[in-house]
Amino acid sequence: MVSSGSSGLRSVLRGFFEWSLGVRVSLGVVVVLCVVCGVVVWGLTVYSFKVAVGEVRVIGVGVGVYWDSNCDNPVDSLSWGKIVINPLNSEVSKNVTFFVRNEGSSPVVVRLNASNWSPRGVEKYIRLAWDYDGLAFGVDETVKVVLVLTVDSGIWYESPRIQEYGFDIVVSAV
Image (cartoon, rainbow, N blue to C red; front, side):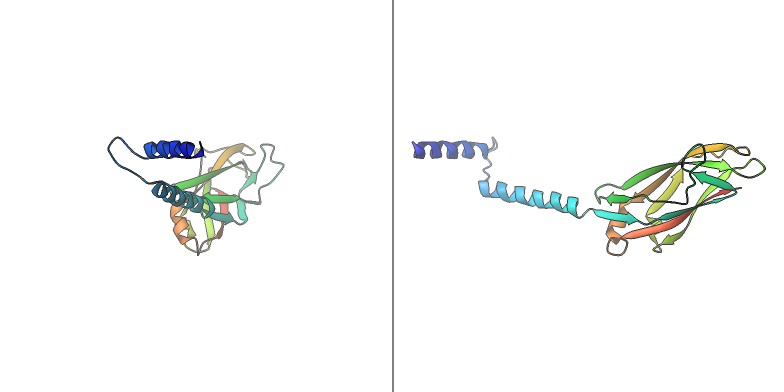
């Protein structure tokens, strides 16, 4: 009975690895392909480049930058946390919301600028944008702003050189 069960299993496996086109694939080939696919998936998962972001300084010039709409908690710095870069995706984005208050004596329009990039050259892989509409706002008025950091997957190829980065964000009244 053991031999007939073993022969039945062989028959099932043989039928499984034969296609209607007459192609026969051995169990060994299937096992090797599964192992290779598993190693590739494991490698992409484990070795996806993780960019650790240092503290990013936030500077308000003529305006205040706050975490809350009541303007009780000023933003001096922020951390984007770990950003996992996968070379198979073109880019990764993270958002942060904060509030900008006009602390001057006349209506203002604000401008966003990033400077003091570290290490040099990292800015070609990182974009900083926001959803501010460019309209002037009055004295003591507050505007909610979503800041978007986008990291291009091209940074993955620089991974031996770029493992941490930082920069200053300057929000200034114009």
